[in-house]
Image (cartoon, rainbow over all chains, first blue to last red; front, side, top):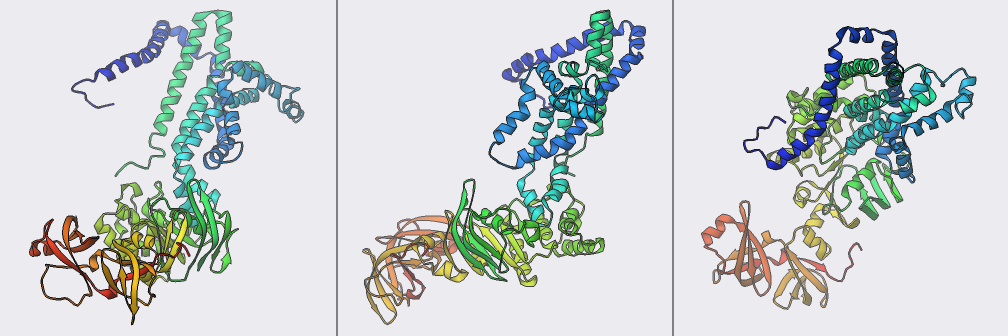
Amino acid sequence: MRTKHRLPDPCLISFSLIGGLIVGLTVLALLNIAVKELSDIPFLISTASDSDVINAIVVTMGAGLNAVLILLIIGTPLAYVLARTDFRGKGVVESLVDIPIMLPHTIAGILVYLLFMRRGLLGAPLYAAGFTFEDAYPGIVIAMLFVSAPYYINSVREGFEKVPVHLENVARTLGATRFQTFMRVVLPLSVRHIFNGSILAWGRAIGEFAAIIMIAYYPFVISTLIYYTFTTSGIKASSAVAFVMILACFAAFIILRLLTRYTGRYDDRV
Amino acid sequence: MIEFDHVSLSLGTFALRDVCLKIRKGDFYFILGPSGAGKTVLLEGIAGLHSPQSGRILLRGEDVAGIPPERRRISLVYQDYSLFPHMTVAKNIAFGLKMQKADRHTIERRVEDLLRAFDIGGLRDRRPLTLSGGEQQRVAIARALAVEPDILLLDEPFSALDPVSKEKLIEDLREIHRTRDLTIVQVTHAREEAMRLATRVAVIIDGVLVAEDGAEEIFNAPETCELARFVGIENILEGRIVSSSDHVVRVDTGAATIIAVSDLPEGEEVAACFRAEDVTLSLPGSSRSSARNTFEGTITGFTPMGPLMRVSIDCGFSLVATVLRDTVKEMGLSPGSRVSASVKASIIHLTVRTRVIGD
């Protein structure tokens, strides 16, 4: 808000003060860890260059990205169907999509584990075909996919719903099939929502811990590594790892925001 | 060209019930009805965006039930123009041709032609949301015509335009209809547009087709009182024919006797309908006029309507006349003035009151 208030509104001021508490908490927490970690730069550098730490960050961000890529392919069509159709049992499908949001993540982990373990319903045939999920990278991706899917689907669906149906109708009358209309009209106009949904899902995915350790304790994702370091070497070592991850996340999000600053904006006046 | 055979179609709160109509090749066909009467649904039905729950829609003589919109060769222009906001004006116009896999040369040529024809060449690389309403409208029509449809559907095209753009569009549409061998179907709630452009008119009220006829008949000789009221005839006086001879009838309304030209028999319950602009006002006691109906009354009020003034008169029954504002000044009329209002017998249209709507 760049608006200048000559006479500050008492309601807005008190709301801002109350709201400031939550922002203040985050700032305080970040400053607190930053001051501690930056007081011992050599230790921070040795932590940041530790191959275990780098591996865990790469695995976490990579698996998260992987989950998002899968969501782009299988979540986008579902979001479109939910946005544009009305059918019996739609409410049930919507609830099913949302279930991972409600469930404690340990439960999500158990659900994924039971399905994808070596003797699991899907895990067994896939193991026979050469895919292992237990204590393996695909297991991490699956767990991340499960917990982050609702965030992606709901966000993209909202984007699709915002595309006026008249635009699709006009495209159809001009000779485009439904699929062509989707590719040339609906998708380009939903780019921002798809991007935001991907960021949300990615953030959710890289933050996952409970669901992942159930199926894949190894290879370490960053949360597992931090917890492991905390229990074996204590708070100093684990907070250094945490701080390195904070920096990595900030960098990633800033880069993404900059890259897509102007994507999908069509209402800017010339 | 387009035929509705007992079509019923409902969508949300909109519903069409058992609509039959026939639109011929080359018609400038208006579908007139109050807002929310299901007119847009009807257009979308023609375009193939909704299927009727019962009945058949025929295009060019064929049942089109299974044919998707992209294969119907019908263009649709919505009230909100619905330009693709992520494409430039030129790309919007080229969209349909691209979908039909026209070669690049053809696309370029036709886009150029349309940009020129609609005088929007300067907007070629602009994004739709930076254009004015009138400009968007022209782009939308150019885009619809790019695919060379033989049917053009227009959904309330004038509703969001300023008066100048509106006049321009009326001229453009006349021109398009004349030169492009198009059948145009336009829905609107504004009867003035229909009076100026339509060759045929259908009136839909509450999802039911209440009348379909040539524009002349609908506006000047409506079949029912409801229709007369809907097409803007302000003077509707109900009564009974008390004498009928030699094509001239006398209608007794209780408050007055009206003379009209008609062959209806004595005893028929009728309503005498005539437009406010067909009433001539004069000061009482002035020279006799050839008009057969003259009523003396007192002016009760004025309503300005642009250059015109709508005058309400109490003649023992209420009567409405429209005259030029200047006339009001010159005649020195004011509320309470006595005037005589005259109407020619030949201009009065009689509707039979016993007739059922939609019959």
